[in-house]
Structure formats: C-alpha cells, structure tokens
Length: 131
Image (cartoon, helix red, strand yellow):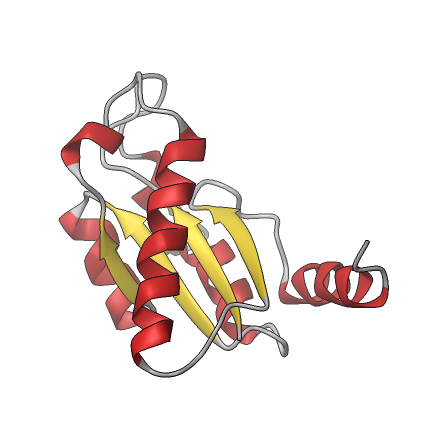
C-alpha cells in the first residue's frame, strides 16, 4: 500500500493555530490533506497530531487519526521522531490487515501548495527509479 502521513501539532511558537487557520474558506491543513486523499496512487491517509481540532478535520475528510504522544508535541521534539512514530503505527495497523507499506508520502499540515498531481508524480518517479 501507498500511504500518506500528515504531521501537525496543536502549538506553534511563530504562528499559533497555523494548521487550522482559514485560508480561502478552508483550514490550512485541508489543502495537503485533500491533495493526499485525491492522489490516485495513495491508498490511505493518516494524520498524526495532538490537536482535537486537527483530528476532527482529518476524520471529517476521511483520514485516519494517529494520537501523537505528548513527548512528540513539544517545541524540542524532532519531526523525524514524529515521523518514525507515525510510520510504526501505520506499519503495525496494516500488518493486522495483512498489508505492507510500499511507499510512504510525508506531508505537513502547514504546506498548502502540495497537489495530488505532485504527489502522484513523486510516486511515479520512485516506482520508476527504486534505487
């Protein structure tokens, strides 16, 4: 399976609430979320967060939610660690269903310029050039 993982947490030092800030009538995070949901090669979309508001937006749009532990939601926490946590969660969930991860698309809730076409192009490049 090809899965997308969006990372977004509640607090931001520079711009509190940025992931849910309305941009052209939608919360900012809905743009990368919808891009992942509409990418033709992505089979499932997960959102890793500590925010109830982000969880609600994710579920409303059809994504799975990963409850990110508090130690991964501090300003000192590394994005790489949140990614590893999300990857492990998804890997284990898919194993229970008899599925494996072929590729994982990593996205951030504050990246509204990503498109489903760009996600699909990236997947095609990786499939064509696995090395």
